[in-house]
Amino acid sequence: MKRTLCFLIIYSFAIGAIAAKPLQEKFSKAAFYAVMKAGSMADVDNELALLSTLLPKERDGYAGALLMKKADLVKKPKDRLKYFKEGRIKLETALMADNDNTEFHFLRLAIEEHAPKIVKYKADIAKDKDLVIKNFNSQSPAVQHAILDYCLNSKVLHREDFSPGS
Image 1 (cartoon, rainbow, N blue to C red):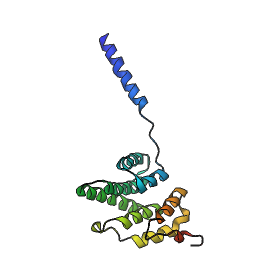
Image 2 (image 1 turned 90 degrees about the horizontal axis):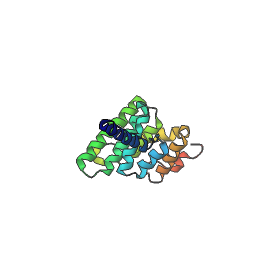
Image 3 (image 1 turned 45 degrees about the vertical axis):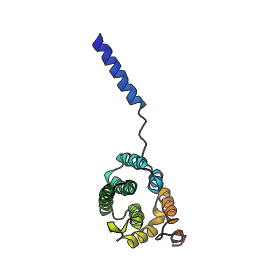
Image 4 (image 1 turned 45 degrees about the horizontal axis):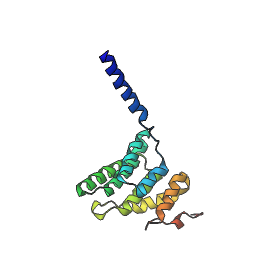
């Protein structure tokens, strides 16, 4: 009897814990770009967890950008360098696998423009800028919005670059 009672109590706690767990959200480009713009460490970690819903081909580019964002949020220089390198490898790997992915070129451009000189990550700014401008109209509305929003604080990309007829 005691054994059955213990089992029922443990079982009901387990079921309660599973039921209380919120349903996992799906990855959203709009939410991703909001985190890239002004997210906290918790926001970045949450977005990284949401990436599990994506295919590996898509996941690495976003994960790389988020890890480099995370590098900007941590305090220790050693951790900053670790996250930046890990993110750089993921983003560059994603670009090698899909060099025509304009969105990943935009992410790299945004990171390159603000990366500290010491990490020497600025070699592809002009190439990425040209590709983003050329393929802007073929991007999803969320990505187009992110690009135009980014233009407000960019020294490289400007809203005029995306005017009709460009």
